[in-house]
Image (cartoon, rainbow, N blue to C red; front, top):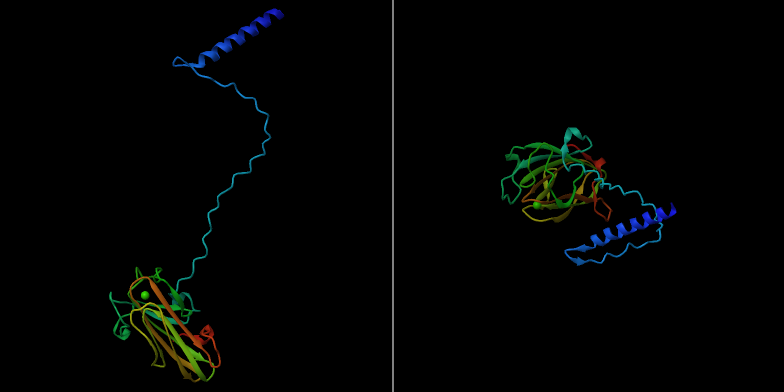
Length: 226
Ligand SMILES: [Ca+2]
């Protein structure tokens, strides 16, 4: 019996060797097939769980510069919006034009930037527009105030109907300043402004209160609707 097992085992080895030899001959050429290498078992560390790809969460969208006045009673500065003809080079007489929309803004703190967002409820108006801006300024104390008006493109500052700063015409941002004496109480402020060709805009109104050395935006609690 044992002899039979040995014979059949040898027979199997011969058959396997022949099969191996047969597969090693291709297109009549001998191809060396290296014997399989025995390898020490390699200790493998468990694979870390696949990293889940998290998309960056977009930051909060900044509120639009101008908003419907009814939707935001905190915005006390009122601006009438006018589409202007292409190639407008200077502020028009807004009293001769019909406003498209009345909008509100909280602060004239529009630093130099690209303007692509347009206006709520107005289609495709990102260039060639004018804003006739008004508010009441509650002057706290009598004294010498410096006003500073930065704009891209043109703007002017009127207080109680009198022109204080002329910063008109098509241009990239230009800042102009002027000192005036103001009495305490309410004063009418008007700032006509226009944007020429897309995209760059700026509109900043700042002041220096009596005795102060730095320009600041006018505190919102001193600004009332016209
Ligand atoms: Ca511009």
